Image (cartoon, rainbow, N blue to C red):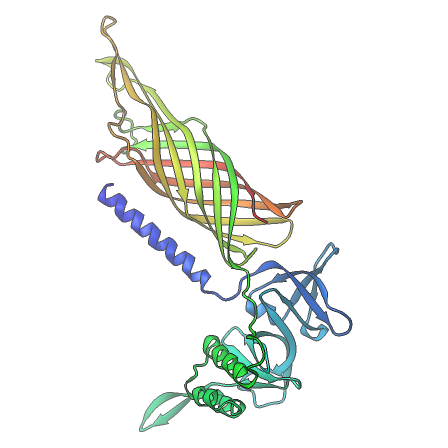
Length: 423
């Protein structure tokens, strides 16, 4: 592989890795999940929850009851709570701000991080995350607070972090001295607080089984089938100015493709962000040219090259909407591996009728690997059975087959039809 191509491959893989890891570390993404709501009066109602990001989940519950045609939105004052197999939210009134000195309160849905004798709740706001603890059976909530203040000493200004939550934990956890002592070293984040509260619950109620919220359905993998056809295809050798067959713009014939799609959803199943890979077989990518480059020597030059490829895409996809029709955009690198060379020749027809045609390869050794980028727009349609059918238009630009020092590129647009085998 040429050095320039190798550097391009490494850069594309690095960029994709960053793109995948960034959303994967986000705690909440939207998606449809089997779930339930707990009304103010009456029994639990089961159906489908449309989960949003954490800030939205704290202010709104969107729920579609089983057998109902449309989802309904609920405010925190209208429910006792809601949840899925991996998330539990409870309605509470909390101070409007962690730094508020007034009695003003607001209704929100708090996310339950740790159940048990001492419960830990989280409230994610735009600027920061707030934490609350409550005890059974009274379930009186107490906020764990951390505050940063600015002080001036000796003409210099300093920012001091006041960890009031540590003192609160020491008092609340005093029934278990070991955990109360550890509270002085606990950091103000969900993992640390979850660990100390969980250990405390096991300390004060060892007869109870270990309790934790179930793992949400994250990092789900899906499989599907893909069929497609090219709409436009072009191969450019050299600068494509037409001086010879090695500096020409070749228009490609239509070809078919098919393969498998493998998707990873870092967030909840059905979340808007996903990464799609798989294998796509392109059969018979054919490019032809007919011209007279050297009229004194030949009356025509006919070039043809026909190649088969196996394509490995790595596309980041973001989808909008949760209804029957959902649009999406995707982009990322693609790696194209040459599997067969069916035709590869240039035929010079001499001006001398007695002379035999001269035949030689158009490209001596076609490159085994092409690297490029692709981007597309599409729509998904939820068909009966819960499996999506997708239609998309994808454009690609990649390195071409000439690896003898001349530049070459592929540019193509394809129509793709996808069918998911995973609900």
